[in-house]
Image 1 (cartoon, rainbow, N blue to C red):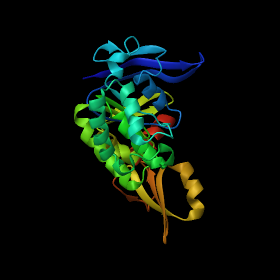
Image 2 (cartoon, helix red, strand yellow):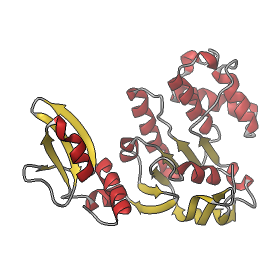
Image 3 (cartoon, rainbow, N blue to C red):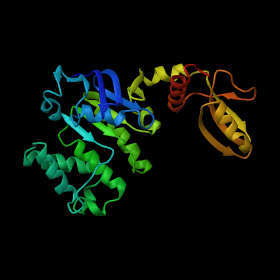
Image 4 (spheres, rainbow, N blue to C red):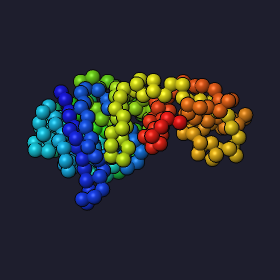
Length: 293
């Protein structure tokens, strides 16, 4: 099982490059996609999902060009886009039955699968309620269920925990970890902690280009000795933010505790164990400035 993205570019309007010369080879596991807004993550996922075609390059599923033969991948694909819509007058069972028919599942198989998935996403007790009466988090759980209807070998999820409460987010992250053993999962999110707990490998996109592709442990190792806790007064915050990448701020009685990323810390800063958020900001700053500060 292998998905190969071979030197892919996507140009809009003949000018704007959403993705440039992107190459990546994926096998079973969770790929965490990180990057600022406009980095090209959604464009990449829509091309892998065969919704749009590359301007240049190829996407190969087990050696088959998906632009030429999209059905080979669509048959084993599950996709949860960021803007997932529902039919408000249908209940969860009716909605999933409709999508199961679109995906070619027979009635008996779909009935068993829908019951299993509604239990998995904890919606059995409201399965007959019209989707228009669902909360945002409940609709997102229906979206997760529909992406898993055909037991996909490739699962693409774009901001999957948006609208979920903390308990739901934990349940979904556990589910991703369980699913990852025998399928390829692409997870795009702005919540770095979601990737930190699930991803086996991370791809960082900036301005349509792949700038980092590595295991989380490799990224964390690269920022060791560069993350510091520094206490400053509130009035100094703006000045500090211009001097150092700041991954978090916490206000306490003795001042504002900042996590700063630098090779040359202030004298009174204390070293701390780096997080993936620190590593992400470090990679962005190196890409932007060309040097590690």
